[in-house]
Image (cartoon, rainbow, N blue to C red):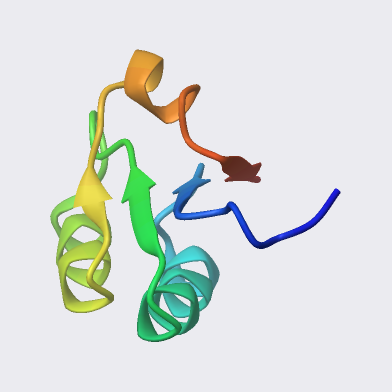
Length: 68
C-alpha cells in the first residue's frame, strides 16, 4: 500500500490524543473526519480546534484510511 492516494482520514475518537493526531494529519494537508455524534462539548471543541470535521458513520467508511 502506498500513501500517495490518501486524502481523507477517519479518526474514530476525537478525544485528547485523537485530536492531537488529527491536527498533525491536517497540518500535512489531509482532510480529517470524525463522528461527533454523542461526543462531549470538550471533545467537539478539541476536534474543531484540530481542524477535524464531523461526518456520519457511513461517510467515515468511505475515507481512504481509518484510524482507531
